[in-house]
Image (cartoon, rainbow, N blue to C red; front, top):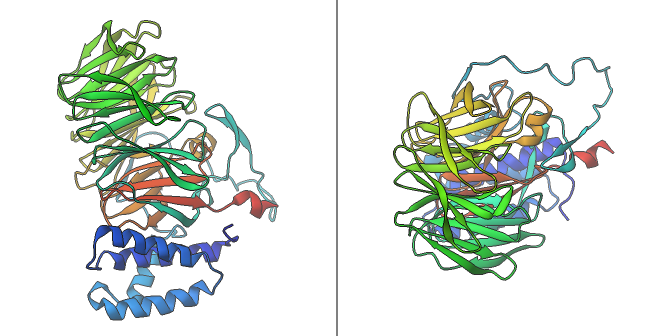
Length: 456
């Protein structure tokens, strides 16, 4: 059991993890040794100790061993600025196109009165919604690090309505199924002969779809960890999705811009379920009503495609081009008020937030994040967004995990623990656990401070 950590201690934990991550990049050792190093440092932080004194001593020792990295006092100053409690830290730039966010939740409360934590329906589950802001993303610990993959992990995804079942797909041609209770790798899924670019869970979490650059899509039975269907394509596949209302069908996309629907029981292409968009497709994401499929390409375009729920017939509708171009590397759709939201990440170091009006996208905000042209994915935080504001989580090229409040233009949190670019992130359905994966194959589990315990 991880001991309770107050706000000051939590701040010190993040300082120490950031310090170790920074100096870890300068250690002349193998990547798996760097992963083991961060895992051991995280384990030591769980022991009860004077963390502030620990930080001072460790900072001094590391600055003596690696003087070129910077002095401890300089780093302590920068750590305070980069920590989640920073009041001046902001995104590189933020252009607000829509209206500003709602007032602070504390406005109108009597002095000394504690804000009650509301409950909302998120993804069909009744969950506690923590106060939006820095406390919503106060991650206190790095309880586990997975290192079963030898190359970049492109996608990590929790099973639906789960805080313990996780899947990863990697450039090492494999997928993995992981459990967070306890922390174990349940299975490695072998069969692809090329990098696995995308995957998707079935509605009941019993099946997993994967798409690979080897030109095949595979259907996996999760409990038995076996492949039960192989679908071959003439071109490398880039993305795949189950039909949300009919998990016996799926849609794939390839590098030629062709979308196809398949019957998963037979593995055969469905008649009339083919559509062509311009250039090479990169991402697929179904809208909130399941009748619209959003498709992106490597030229900064997002297409809306209608999908017949019964026959899976595809029909291209509208096209939206993002300012600045660049390849779109991820799409994320979340229910919002008054309209659903779509987040698009581009290799041009830009994130775009749209509202969805049926099959049309309306740009409301954009921001700049240091991606350096890498395929770094971003996600929307559904609980905080449902309560107030627009919160997103993104990886970055400097190895940090960034949490932004796009309404206020502030960085809510910056997590440091990776020694190379962070390619993808995901949140559990109740946002109590954050997962981040990097270009070396390291997957880090971040745990949020238990707000409910503090309210009691």
